[in-house]
Amino acid sequence: MTRIDRILRSTNMPRAWGLSFAIGCFACTHALACPGPNVERTIIFNHVPTDVDVSVIAEVTIIDMKPENLQDPSNSTGMAVMNARVENVIKGQIGRGTLKIVTPLGDCSNGFGVGSQGFVAGELRSDANGNSELVAISENIRKANARPH
Image (cartoon, rainbow, N blue to C red; front, side, top):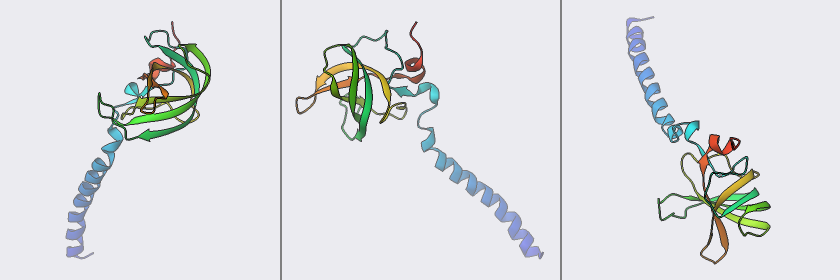
């Protein structure tokens, strides 16, 4: 190995490591949007929620879901809009069949999607077309999965 090869090899190695480190840091920034599993939230409860003050609680199966770019006036986040099959009405006045469910989406929204089954809780309101929709509350995933006392 010539003297020039040794010099080039020794100077490029620290640069390569530095460049790799910088790229790695930039690539990981989006993965850290939600600080961790302890703050993830869901609208699907495994058991009937007993400590919530809402007008509607129903057992549902989500049959389709799409994120919307609707703006929630209270916090300007996107919304998840879902259609769910109502399996059982626990509290409130809603019919069996299909129910439109909406909830704000955030970086820590998780634990629900097409095929999810469980209990949802929230308040009924009318959408822009006058149709009923359930504005679902979200809860910490651990709390939503825990058995009530």
